[in-house]
Length: 366
Image 1 (spheres, rainbow, N blue to C red):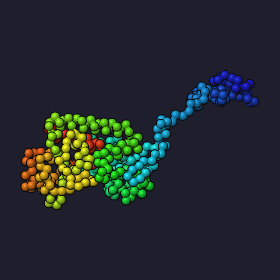
Image 2: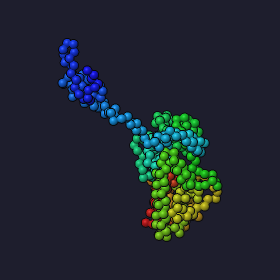
Image 3: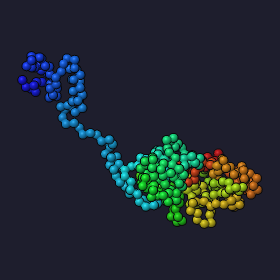
Image 4: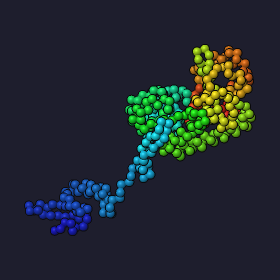
């Protein structure tokens, strides 16, 4: 008897030389011996095997890729990215980012990505107000000017982003850990302003991280906020009064003021909402501020005074409270002193810019 001539699933009984009946079943071209107790289990097992192999319905389809073809291609693509310290090759789209400067940590967060590491998280939370929380699992990798290389290495990043003046000295070591991009937010005289550089860098980081659409939406929201804040200020007539913006902090028994200059990012933000800077620096200030004291303020007393002062170092309530120069200023006597808050970061990214625009409009029109 030719067993393979039997129909699929048919039973076959064979008498062996000792006249014992041997029961078989033919499934999928396979002859399987069985007994009554195991028959069901055998059939079910073989059915599962045949289903996994595609049965007799034809060749099995090719395995589906783990990611769409476009994403697979992007994951293998090597791009050369230009930055402040040269060119860096980056393979695919980085997933594990370490940010060694608060501005770039903000940029990454604005794009919907939590970095695996950020430098000096505690002080970032103190100085930088954001609508996005830093996740608890994000690791603090040390000071911005002296990051901990061992901590960074342990995170196994595939991208590191830093500020030129802070990481230039150990750039080679960082670049051995992961591709490292370095940016310079302070253009030289005649080479642009801090605001334009901030926008360009944000777009560049978004492109590296495959988040161009997200970046476009962030900037769209920012511009919408500018328009709304500008209209609000104009309706109140506050666009006709210039401003002066200062960070202030104690220096022993005196107070140091950082008066924002026209090339600073903060001034450019406020210009976007229709305001004009009253302070004109005598010389180009690459960092966007002039360091001075209270004696410089009488020349600016007809402007609205916006300030960034930490509550833990409230120089107005402490050093300036009984200062005759301060108390004699028109903006003090006329209650035109506006507190932006100690966590208003004037060197940040688009999220900080939006917060500054909206906060200023609220203060000037309340």
